[in-house]
Image (tube, rainbow, N blue to C red; front, side, top):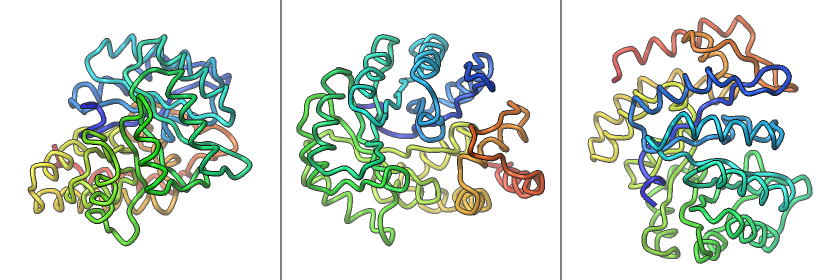
Length: 298
């Protein structure tokens, strides 16, 4: 699917203390992504805090986003949940609201087997009836997809892409070659983990599923376009400008840092959902310096 390619931007989901979606703030985040002409919007991903939101809050967020975007950029909606029936309901909600695609992570408390994950994905893909991207995020789910399981899932109707974690030892080219040999033509393979984006894109990945693009889509898109055009020098230059921000992401957690970025940029004064605590004010200078390093990237 074409919208599982290029830059996918993952915004925060702005909600108040009662869990009510702040429509105007969400629209402001989305407008930045639309204006930058990103390839897709990744709504309710990890950056969107999907795991902390109720079904009703998620349903409202999807409706607000789809209505505001109005078809200008494809909207991919995260539908991960602990129970299969809950994920099925979220997929149906997303489809009813007009989403273009789905993103599914195998959330769990009890460690899952490969067969359990396969059946979970089969049920959600069937119920959603939309192109679905496998979300391979072992750092949060505790489950790592093998190449064989990805290949098996790729044969299911509607399963069209995978969002991979950073490749071990930076071996993106080898991993892409292996996965493409096992999956159907047109199956899209992209990566998350912003600090590895340049390497993954230069190695030929189809997509960058980006945290920072949720608030700074312009510089992220510049990196994506340079890498996908094969301009390694320009991609490396932009990645170097991002390095102070990548260091903060790795040290403090990208989710926490994104809330402070939104505040520093004057876009929104939001707090992460408890028990996640906001970054202390002592980190503000480092965030401002990291953003200043991107000043000339367009």
